[in-house]
Length: 382
Image (cartoon, rainbow, N blue to C red; front, side, top):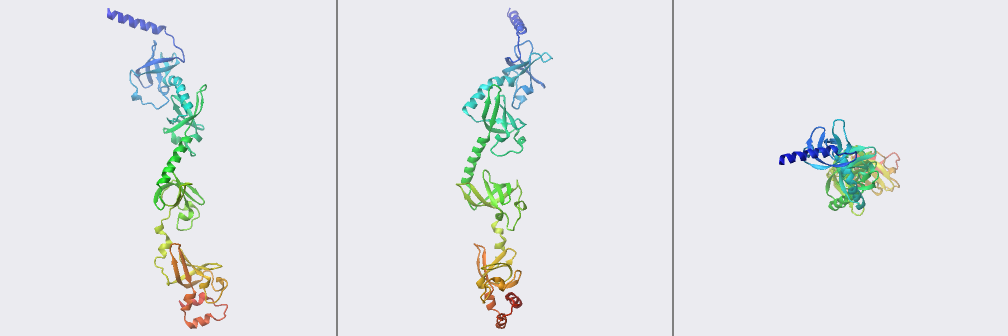
């Protein structure tokens, strides 16, 4: 009797199914029957099963192994007959019908949430939100310019809805303000951690005619050209390139403005210090006259070291300008009067060398001979 009643019940259910009519756009309850290569077969309470193609299962990436027989959810009817006796249905479109209310609430409350970028399209990228397709303009994906949007595909970013049209289901997202706020917070934290005089590792982000910007992890610092190398350079590209990892010394930090001054060159390798190690006060050195000023002459002691001969230290004679007795390129002997290593200055004297010369030569030097130059005489003596 029970078996007969069960059979009759099943028969009546089948009859009900055959008499049920469904239409495109209907939202039906579905239960997974089979997971196959083409998609998911579901029981929808109709005489024919429903088929969900994989591209209609979800806007998000699908883990096929996570779908189990017996899983239940709602689907939307796409086609009553797909030509093979199945009803073509969509899980993602059914979710979209109910998702609009959730999206509206996110928009009204200005809530922030995370999305995974799915594809790059003209002008930006797309990402699913509650099963709905949302658009993120290229200018709104970050707080900085993004040249290659494809790098974001598969990545998760935090966004907010900046535009919503429920009628057309148009959703526009932005992560720009959120990224800017995070960057500002990271910058404040990084600035608080930095210490003047310490060394840090950073990445070169931009080359400019006057120097290089280096990112220290949330903050950018500037290396002026004269702090890039101990030798004169024409352009920063002579020393570094964009994307290069460098070790820098923090010279100065203004926490109020966020400005950071950096140095790439190692102070321990300063040629000036290396080439002045063996120099000391009262030492006699060979120098070459390099340039004149109204207050004296500069003379090269070595490739990277110059000294100043003050006009009062050029000659016992009273002269108005150094070129009266010296010439550019002239080689002479000079005495070191002082070395200021902190200021990197050396003062020289020709007069004190002259005082040590032979009296006969001094008498010759005092003659009014326009062709005789101080350096010529000194050069012949030393």
